[in-house]
Image (cartoon, rainbow, N blue to C red; front, side, top):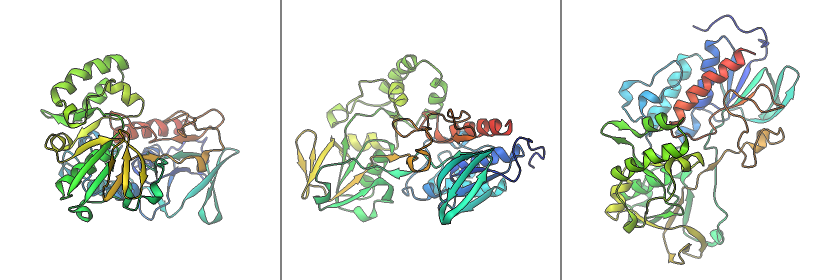
Length: 384
């Protein structure tokens, strides 16, 4: 039951508005409700968890069930150690119902303006909402990003961003190039190879760190948690022998070991690839690493090593943008890369009562850190 002693500094006719009905937004709303603070979640899609619903069929969490639950409700054991995409969606639906969260779907917030004692939210349909505080939780993977490749419009073959990929069935017997060797690109390449694609190549610009998702029952996530507060140089030294023992050298297959430390790269935003079949697929030649994509021409893809290949399908696993500029770009709360200058319980100078969650990609696990941020944000808001 929610605590009935709401802080007097928060006007009760002005709820805290949480923008985004994914894990981060729901976690903050639940943490606020426990503290007696009214929160309203605004989700632009017609159902909560829209981002998760749109992921590819094969997806499972790379973090363990036990370390991925949101505040106040564990993920059921029946969902298994590595929870599926559909399991995550079902959990989010149950979570909102269990905490009796006030979720309004079909409402997109298009702008924010600071006003006396709070914030004015501009929403679709010309609606204006006044909140005592605002939490932006629109997600790390918001808007698909595509590099500005020369010649792409004249390529002629089938081209899609990874956000539109669902399963390998449409690509049976086809020659497919997956561009990008992050976790998404690696897993899609394996999915295609196992699902009957005729040939699968994986374009690699920078060799990634690859880690086993679990070694002798020990999840890679736990290592990330234990090392996250160590000096980066120390964490790099500790990780080096573990990865060398656990992951074979794939240099002869076109996937060399990185020459930079695992945690140094993670600090720069390059999260290690958790192996869900990539190592075996590369060793057996079912996934062929090739050089990075430089440009396109009619029917061909030109790679960084000068070679020309002619895949029938190109799937760009080139990531996403946070796309916060349209919402808060004029408030001075974003850095030069479009990321919030303050995150979690901190607020940016000149923007009190405006919080951001879910805009980092930590090695300790996104859902775990969303949960920790939710508690900290809720505590900060409840204190006024």
